[in-house]
Image 1: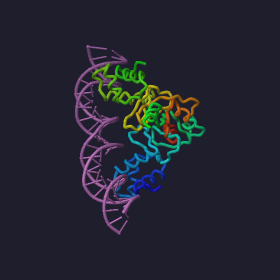
Image 2 (image 1 turned 180 degrees about the horizontal axis):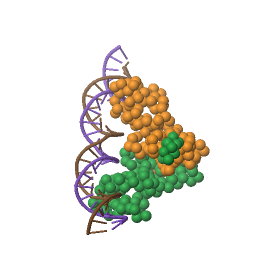
Image 3 (image 1 turned 45 degrees about the horizontal axis):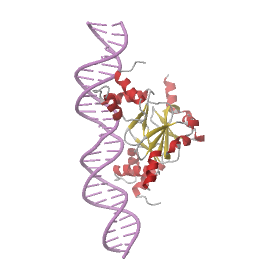
Image 4 (image 1 turned 135 degrees about the horizontal axis):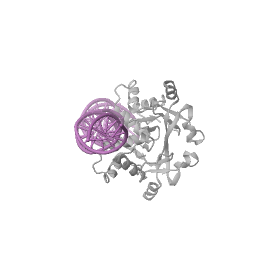
Length: 129
Length: 129
DNA sequence: AATAAAATAGTAATCATTACTGATTTGGGT
DNA sequence: ACCCAAATCAGTAATGATTACTATTTTATT
């Protein structure tokens, strides 16, 4: 711990203290309450860094913004096409269908993306060692 | 059927004849082989329309491009962080973990997004009727 | 053939995100 | 404490995928 700059710490705090899956701009505005002269570029850079390290999650729901989630544990996201909200839902029993129907949400489509390394790139990496 | 313009038909054909989950630009280049003077805006507009109607799927993996999928049936997408490929995987038994480990793919993160209408917006719609 | 509605080509504008630069901070070694 | 190198930062400029716009063309209906 404490490899974190004051700025990165504040950004992470904002993410951990909300469940709205904010955009970079939203995080920027919130962090400015604490660090008024923080740069938007700093917010973007740290969000990217935290995503790369797996500390946070980044998700695109198709509204033109990247959204971030301080909870990097596997769970489902319910995106409303009308109000644009993104709600969390548990992935009980690893079942997609169950998760989507959670809490009165009416799903019409769903997208599941796993991030990692494909078989081909895995074998290439082994050869390099 | 045949509410489709020649352009939209060609765009849909391109999507149905590949499994690379192309970007709008890639689709544009392919359709130009058939309709050389098609406009990039037409490609974007039709992709958006087809996505809205559920005919195709739109997914963002975080590489700065929107990707499209002619197969709108629920299935998993395996995105390689190294080569950027997006492979399809079946969702056997509705299990996320199984799908991600498919075919030598090594997952590190996953994102599941269900699109639809949330409980609150559902009740508002009912009141309008 | 006439008309209205929908879709298109081509181009201009948008704006979230990224890149860049010079200043500031941090941490380790002496 | 001091020095130095590596990271990180604030501020601003640039990028480029996507969207908006307009005049024209196509399509569907009568």
